Image 1 (cartoon, rainbow, N blue to C red):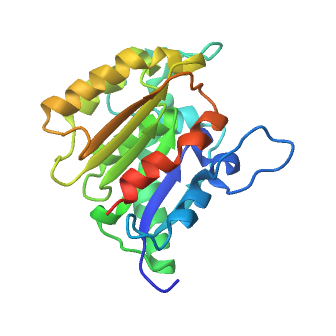
Image 2: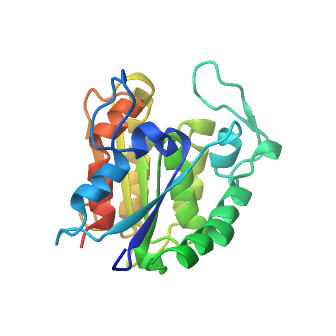
Length: 242
């Protein structure tokens, strides 16, 4: 690598899976599109975007406990996914998860590769619960992350309990930016009213849509790797754009 690059920590839930990260997927997969790494490679060297390193963070069986924002939860909450059990505050470990990203993983990446380590060149991104913890990461560590890509954010967890926390801990709009999106089918059909609340929170805090914040609605898009892969270039271009 000849030049220093921005860093995108692609964490999280299914967004951290090889199907969304990789440029190719094993046959006979119905998933198409370039994926995260393919998109970054395709835009490498272009004047419109900065070069980047993609750090794919694998998920574990405790992904709900790792990705649910810890700060706002007291007691048990409804996860609001069909068939999913309630989530207890005592089991949530997202603060420890983010501490690992910031104090262990990122220093290792910065020491091993030619990165631009500052806030303006470091982003976090994920889908579903990964989107939820990505916005939480930037509120917890606003000096580390300058942008969050939140794809199909599962705001309904806890009936939107993370939204008040989001409002109370928004970082400075002069130095941070957000991408949010959602579909209208399957689980994503629940998301629009929650996302509209998030949009109003951003607007009142001084974020300007189209500049340091974008929200996109994808008609007919479902809550799936296939849907996310087809549009993953859009949040990446927004985050990495010059």
